[in-house]
Length: 232
Image (cartoon, rainbow, N blue to C red; front, top):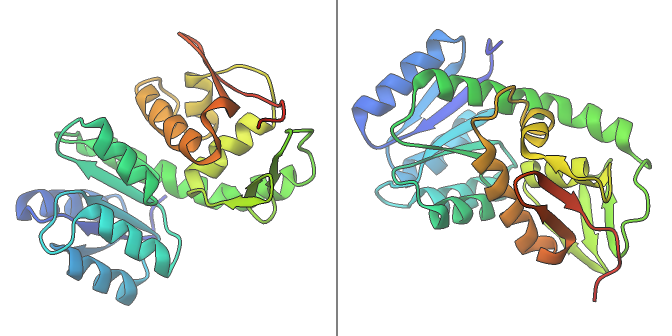
């Protein structure tokens, strides 16, 4: 699955960096390593990776600043590693362009599965947007262009991360319909299990911050639905 895909691993702890690198290499990925923020930005430019595994706590520049800088160079899927299960940390990471996150300590098997799922989603994105183009109904003053992967609220364009766009596109394909967290996890993240439902919640919060909290309705204990009424 991972053959010829290049992953940049950014982690300042040598033991963790080595373990992640070895596991990804064993899974067939071409792995490039960096140990601090400035080195990560330089390695990103030099190696042009398909995906970045990025620790939040780094010397030089923190992971959030690194993510902001590399996304400005070229959009790329980013899996962030957070030391504490701190929701604020997670939301900041998602806001600067991270697509997913893992809380330390994590199982290497889980990390490899997340990397594979992220790369599958990138590969599927073009097909999904092509087939979905023009199929979206009335979304009030929210406008989504699946082919161009662009979003507007009224006259203002909203800049979403790839994951936020995929999540919005899935909700917009069934406006008003409540989609369970498990279904969103399966259809947006390509995860078969229900172990990552907090990931869905965090991304919905990040999406609400950009398109308006009232546009995504929470049905407690069930999931989320995109509201279609025009908002003021």
